[in-house]
Amino acid sequence: MWIRRQVEARLRRSHRTRPVVVLTGARQTGKTSTLRRLFPRHGFVSLDLPSEAEQAEKDPVTFLRRHPAPAIIDEVQYAPALFRHLKSAVDANRDRNGQYLLTGSQKFTLMKGVSESLAGRADIIELETLSLAEILAARAKTGIETAIVRGGFPELHANPEIDVPAFYASYLATYLERDVRSLAGVGSLRDFERFVRACALRAANLLNKADLARDVGIAPSTANQWLSILEASGQIVLLEPWFSNRTKSIVKSPKLYLADTGLLCALLNVSSTDQLRRTPNAGAIWETFAFAQLRHRERHAGRLHSLYYYRDRSREVDFVVDAGNRVDLYEAKWTELPMESDTTNLRFVRDIIGPARIRSSAVICRAPNSFPLQRGFRALAVMDLS
Image 1 (cartoon, rainbow, N blue to C red):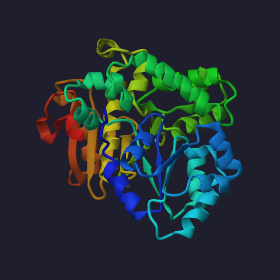
Image 2 (cartoon, rainbow, N blue to C red):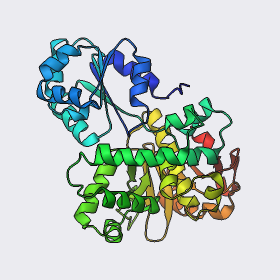
Image 3 (tube, rainbow, N blue to C red):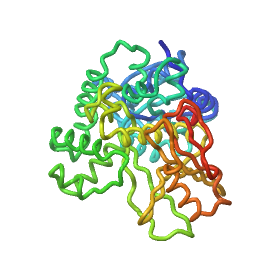
Image 4 (tube, rainbow, N blue to C red):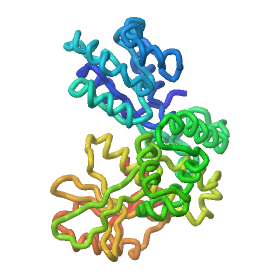
């Protein structure tokens, strides 16, 4: 079963207008299958194969002769030396668009190669796991809680018979062996896995690197490096605070989120909707889910760097969407029936920023439909974020 992705229109447009398209994202988000389905006439080669990666790195001229444009080159970060030769190949036919479609799941190497050799030639697009809208378009009867526990990896929804805990156990093992082991600075995969689980326990909270390092038993500099690895490989997202000239004492630390609730649930040993309802981490999991839907919405709308959180010494609002002159405020609450008390922080921050700048204020909740609350606030069904 093929699940259509919202990014497909942008990929087609970029293919028509740019010589190189780079599709990045975590492993198994559907990068390769999406490109191969949209562009079936392109040649294909994967650098996951050691023999292909070795030739691409050591003899890129012969490699590109074997795989001429138009071509899809999968996991291109495994051959950093190839980027310079791709530049020469592209420049030889600069007026020809859609020459090379590149995928990569390690942003460090990938973006370094793109910035050094393909600047001005490549359009860079990120593919995350499925949004709730994409899941429901494929499986209309999927409940929200089921979507949270299963997560957004396309394979889990294309084939509902897959054992979810086994999938994530395999995913984590593959991630550690294939991605983390190849990156410098990770001496112990066992410590790194413990670090990932410690991050899961801190999901939707302010990032305190010193506490995280102490709990895992590693140096703060190591924790900082490992966070960068998780972020670069698409496993975590750091949400930065929003600043206004009229506010004081704003916290500067980012908030830590896992990119996908399925992996988060697996790391927290939540494998069913019943366990989700009982876990003390339900609020953090729900906030992570709401954040993922907001990221999908903002990216689909073409808005970059529009999503933040607000926190001062006494109050926090989970999400601030900065749309230029106007601002949206959102709180994420694990409830089907928000109360007026759930809008306390929204009201406080709205007054600080100034009501004239606020476009909307809402509580993102599990209600089946959106409805108004008192004082101009709204209970927003998560489905309505798409």
